[in-house]
Length: 282
Ligand SMILES: [Fe+2]
Ligand SMILES: [Fe+2]
Image (cartoon, rainbow, N blue to C red):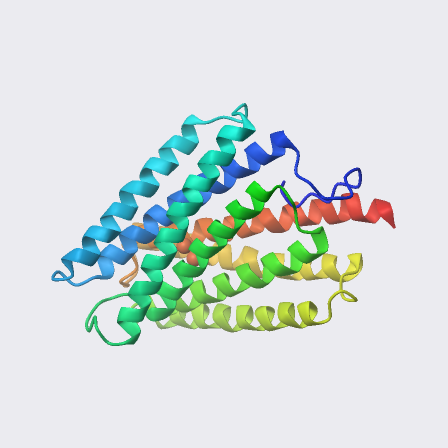
């Protein structure tokens, strides 16, 4: 994985094979996510917002093409070709980020009354675009963040994303689904706490970056992400089977489920590196 703290390389540079593999993984995951964001934005616009609808549709097709191209490339792709593709995708991510911020501006200045996307949702998907953009820049620069810094930064980012998801689910379920709304609110509170806890650990850097503290941090986050992931999976299945009342698009339910799975993979990867590379050095 990308944040490999390779003790043989004091500059923490990424090797060419890993560069291609990581780039493809990121692009395959996030281009599908960006494509779906375009759909959610479009569904939230009013019928008369034809210009915004067109723009959203253009982004949908752009990221669909990027997704298809990423699946036609393999781990054998030449690093130079990968680097060019990364730059191209990074530009697309920058553009969709700008579009999302423009939409946020329109909503917050009350220019889209009656449109159906919450400002926090639009801000949230813009943060995800910005994250994707920055990952591609980082990969192309070929320099990796030290493992301990990456652990805290990625967790601060994704814990907030998870807290937002719980809030969206709670607000998009029908208010009469009292039990599920309650569960969503509890997840929201739990993840808000975890975000504060992660920021506390960040504030105590670098002294807080010991293996036992980081290991415990990952363990604790994993427990909460696993239960949120399971809740999202249940919600997704119930929505697909039309067993609960909500205005959640089935694809949105699956989308947030996949983002939780992605965060879990990142936690597991950090855990493996932390208990492998770093503890050997102590
Ligand atoms: Fe998303
Ligand atoms: Fe998300």
